[in-house]
Length: 276
Image 1 (cartoon, rainbow, N blue to C red):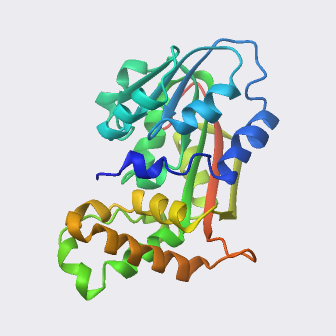
Image 2 (spheres, rainbow, N blue to C red; image 1 turned 90 degrees about the vertical axis):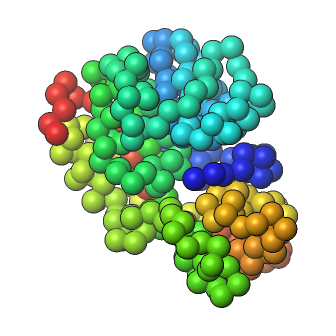
């Protein structure tokens, strides 16, 4: 998988649903109100914008924020554009225990925003989260369950002018979308691992983008097919993907493009023993 951090970062502000998660949901659950020095892990930090804009302000007292992503180009961009003395960016994959085991039992808070939908083995990801947390530590994980992005990817890859470019390419459409996994499915999974579930919701969110250019660039950046298109055809592909997304989502009363997705928010607390 190869995503473009510069395209992704064209949208300067976080989605409203993500902002609400950090400014309303987590504070309501007591996050950021403790005087304890937190050791925080941000899983799937991407280019670091959310780490800087939302994770950092949530914790008035913290010792360190470790921010990881499986894509080296995202980490390089984050180091250059979203650096902070107490944020340490590094390449790691929550599905690969060897890349994160150095933090075993050391983390007091884990956040992960729009990362877990990319995982092939979500249960392994949740198990590794359990091992990384201290006893009593908590994790807040927000990910996409159903999105017009997935339908648009499946539609555009079938088009005759594009399909030859994607032979054998993993489209990274989430199994949760294909099998219609809901909040209760994941709640059962994480309870079986041994977590206490403090918060688990599933809600459809509608986001408004400020312009067609912002919309086109942002969604091209998270479409894994984009990098497999020859460079001289990429602008045409982005136009086609934009058209598919717009067909699925439409525009608001002011003519601005909309985006709809069903999001799952989970906040869990670690028990002493992992069951599985």
